[in-house]
Length: 170
Image (tube, rainbow, N blue to C red; front, side, top):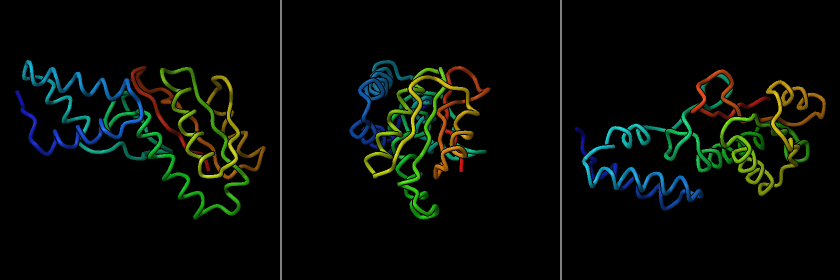
């Protein structure tokens, strides 16, 4: 049975403090309480904070849950801020051309799409967002059709149902 070191506990508490989603904050608090009361959950917490989800082929994918190594609102917000920075630096007229945002029917997909749209709109981007789940290929199709700067689709495609993802189209 592993124990939480002071550094890991501090990182978890810092994440809880900054996480915008109450459910995700509560999820981490419960895991911490279980660890304190029963001495378990250290491996789970260590995995959630072992790093950050990183871009692979076309985007991020991972289990839905709280922490930087999971798919959640905080990770989507942070990723979208970086995406906006890249678009502004790399794509002429990116803000006015906009970003197409789609999502599938997986758990929290619509929520993640709304989070991404909110970040982009706050940064001054035009957002072309679907109002219902759509097949993944519709997003890159609409990027081309609208001449948008880019697109993103919230989906984990063929991955397990407990996962979700963030796919980017240029």
